[in-house]
Length: 150
Image (cartoon, rainbow, N blue to C red; front, side, top):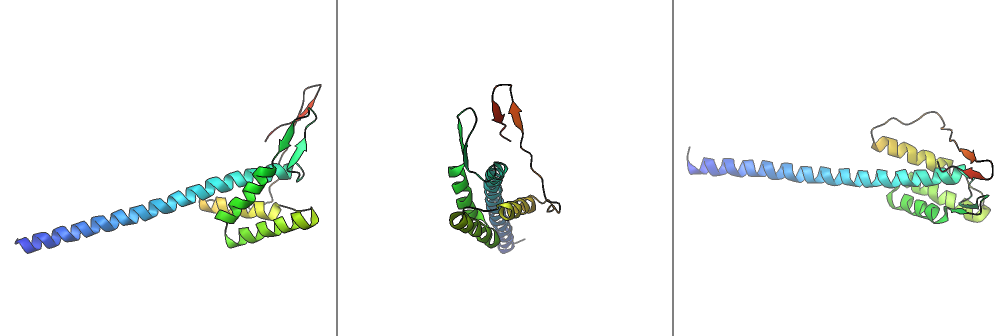
């Protein structure tokens, strides 16, 4: 084998290694973006469910005088949907905000369902066909009624 064949083989091997390295970097970046998006949407989902369980009121006073305030979290959740959401999810979030500001009434069901389906899809799970039913537990200790944080 002469030197030319050796250097051509070495160049081809290096190109294959570099191409594999570039491909791995791109895959890693995509996985990191997907992980960040799923993590953010999981938190958004939790906030929207919590506000929904509390009758759509992002802040309310408990019987013991403490204030459960989700208003900043709710605002953050909408902003995150605008940042990471698909076109459909952003449109649903915009409709929710417009209804909330214009009519002071809204249903977050469409957004919650879209986020749930999106997160399940990103994790390789099938979408749910049944409408989920959420649970709110209330703890009564004989003196004061406390709503459990679910």
